[in-house]
Amino acid sequence: MAEDIINRVANSKLKVLDLEDYYPSGSRILLDIKDWLAEGLVLRELDFRAHVASHNWEQYQNTYVALTCSTDAIVPAWAYMLITLELEPYAEKVNLGTLNELETSIYQDIINDLDVSEFKDAPVIIKGCAKKPVPESAYVMISNKIRPIARSIMFGEACSSVPLYKRK
Image (cartoon, rainbow, N blue to C red; front, side):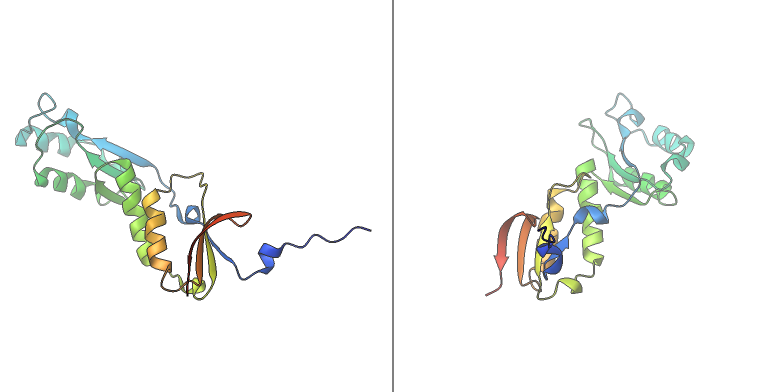
């Protein structure tokens, strides 16, 4: 006699929060301005402005851009501001730093705007093992956001979760 297989996880009150579901599409680009500097170290304003004016900014349409300078050059803040103003009509987001810092900034915006009311008084599993580059900092941010409202928080998968928090 064959018995029906019952999915107890699907029938439970357990809520799964997968940060990968919120990963926005669009290329991530590291824009290194070292080649825009004399010998990679010195910013000459006229030359720099000419390079910015002649650069094809349309190639950044719907992308996420991390601005950086990979040399030890001292780059004034206005230089990054000038590039950001050129990128603004095209890029989804511009951030100063590494690609990982860009991903952190993207997720900070997403988590700040996330409606977490569905997790009120519920046991929550924050899913791990993402195939997309979800930064570890995003897991910290979402933990802070849902702790005040969740009944419990676990990390991993329903079959092998790590308990993290339980309201007393």
